[in-house]
Amino acid sequence: MRIGVLTGGGDCPGLNAVIRGIVRQGVDAYGHEFVGLRYGWAGVLDDNQMELTVESTADILPRGGTILGTSRTNPYADGGDGTAVVSAAMDRMGLDAMIAIGGEDTLGVAGRLAADGVSIIGVPKTIDNDLAGTDFTFGFQTAVQIATDAIDRLHTTAESHNRVIVVEVMGRHAGWIAAYAGIAGGAQAILVPERPFDIDALCDSIRRRHDGGRTYSIVVVSEGAVPKDGSSVVLVSGEIDAFGHPRLGGVAVALVAAIEERTGYESRVTILGHVQRGGTPTAYDRVLGTRFGVAAIDAVQAGSWGSMVSLSATEIVLVPLSDALDEPKLLDPSFYDTAAVFFG
Ligand code: F6P
Image: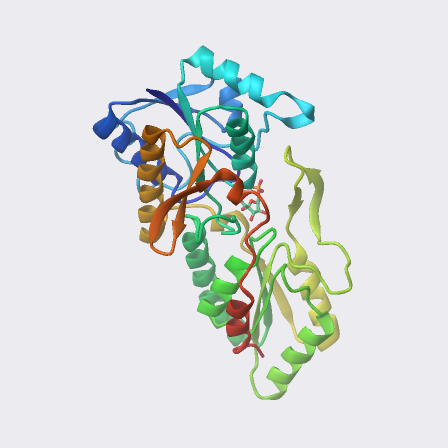
């Protein structure tokens, strides 16, 4: 078989481990040929391809990003007939099947293609860990480690200056990165999209902590956190991508101003942004990516079209692509309650 592989949406540490796993198992065990489609669905639409061989993917395991490049191109944008366009491209390139590695948007396209009879398998990816249908996505653990290292560093400078530091992490719909990094980094408050925050209650808890003798505080906030009064999230720009998502970022700037004004404590903001997605994956993400890649090509071999590889407890299993697409996987409330034990 000749199989097309693409990575779509935001990049994520561990993507190259998936690609390497697919190619190594696919060539060695099944004798398949691989074509890398460059820049997500854009590479399918433009026939922008590269050869993927055991040799060309041999040393990519520790590398961040994706050797294929990525984009947020949507073949169904503006009412386009994505299925016809992708099927025609697959015919032109002589592809028998596709493996799409991506998050809700890329897998949403894969799900539509599968429903229309295209031979496709999905691999779930996002640093946000908010995809349903899998216990964890690769890239999440790396992002948490990066954010935790940053929080550790912010502790010492916050303490030296008696400051409140608000750290903004990624997390559009769900507060997984904030909650994990907040617990690991010993944050005094964690604000997540699942629990709209009350700015006065937050300031009261910071005041109580400082009245009790502590001289500094670290607040971790997800980019998608919203205040209780229902005002909209703070946007960096009004820009909307091809899948209809606004570009987030900057809620921490508004927060820091509100904290300083209400408490009088000197406050600073750190927005970690894309540093959370860059660089080498942790060992855990390399292993999970490798397992997903090998399982994805096994699923191709088995003809399990319309499936997605998934982590269920410690096992890699196949689930229908539609399982990933219903609703985002939100933070487990009891997990957040554990984090809250250490607030204030
Ligand atoms: O991939 C998910 C994510 O990292 C979100 O957490 C974040 O809001 C978004 O991507 C940022 O996207 P971009 O790279 O397009 O700025």
